[in-house]
Length: 159
Figure 1: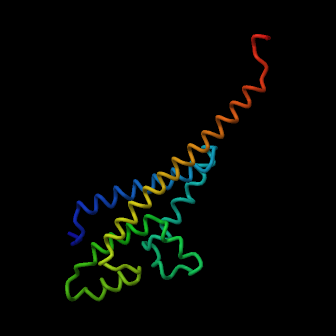
Figure 2: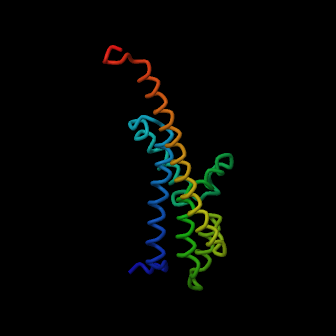
Figure 3: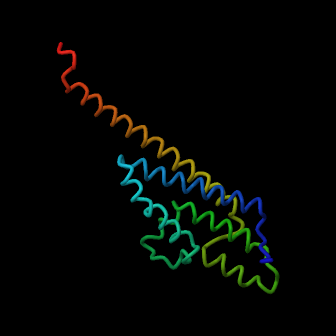
């Protein structure tokens, strides 16, 4: 056994929220464009920053300061933070310095875990609302173009 301290229920909910947030952010990017091929090609623009700014590959403080602000809108950063907080919050006495160092390296405070939950849910809601709003805006524009096209065509009845 690996000896993970993270409760399976919390682990499951974190993974579920990760998939919800990934879908919501991808929906937002997809709603910004009208061509499905372009939306598919923009997929790396959603996924790659998630990993860079999550703290899983590189500690966030090591990222250049001028671009660190992106970490606050990356949902995976907060989900990885929650995972680290739940995993390293209760360490044995001999491993406590390593646990505290891991949390400090990512700028995490175990007392703020509820804020991290709130941020993850708020990011999901924001991305979903923004994508629905953009889709409605795009549908209105497309319907307007279709209506103008239909008006400019001569009728088939000849009247």
